[in-house]
Amino acid sequence: MRLKFIFIAFFIYGGSLSAQTDSNDNKPKKEDFSDDWANISKYQNENELIGLPKNGEKRVVFLGSSIFEFWKQKDPEYFNSHSYVDRGISGQISSQLLIRFRQDVINLKPKAVIILAGSNDLAGSKGHVNNETILNNIKSMADLARKNHIKVILCKYLPVYEYPWNKALKGAANQIISLNEAIMAYAKENSFTILDYFTPLVDERNGQKAEFTTDGVHPNLAGYKVMEVVTDEAIRKTIGK
Image 1 (tube, rainbow, N blue to C red):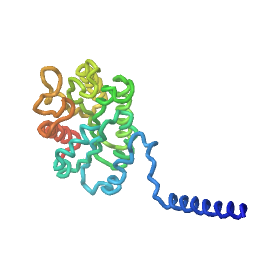
Image 2 (cartoon, rainbow, N blue to C red):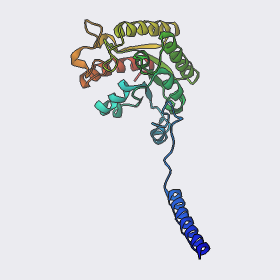
Image 3 (cartoon, one colour):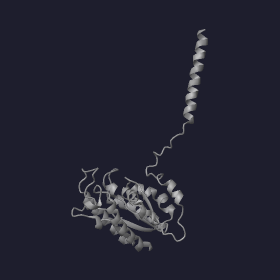
Image 4 (cartoon, one colour):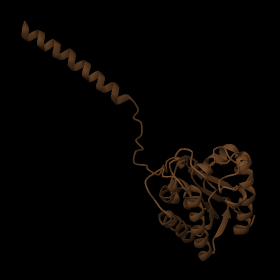
């Protein structure tokens, strides 16, 4: 009798375990993107949808971090009315932009790429870097672009007096100025177009003018409108329009 009871209990437990396993197996597994440090998956579907440029299309890719990502959110018409492709991802540092360069720039076959890099590196968002590290990543992106017959437009970064999320960081304004000087020197040596976002937005403290920014780092719509004027000028200078 005891043996019979044990057998029945085991049978019930085994059936329950089997049902639980089957139930778990039927659940769709969420894809693990923990290895995608540069978030190349973010624009994968969009890149497939837009395809290659049409005949005569002068496509320009904007590669950067939150400044570019928020731009399309605040003024989508600017990108929709041009052959401009926004590939900004908030918080990214220059090494992440470099990893994304093949998928989000080269494979889209643009006439030109606008590279805006360095602020998150300097802000201490991820580790410790200096101008040389940032510039080396920019150089690698520029080399890849040139090898693939893509015109290079390098940006003087927007002025930043301090980062609201890292107020302990001192001298942000001077760091941005120093980085911009290094980028300008490199662009001049290689005959790349410089896109100056610093000069039209800067105030007397070497931060952003209050009327053009939401937090001292990111532009508001008025700030983006100012950036659109100098961006269009740089693109005309580089590839015509």
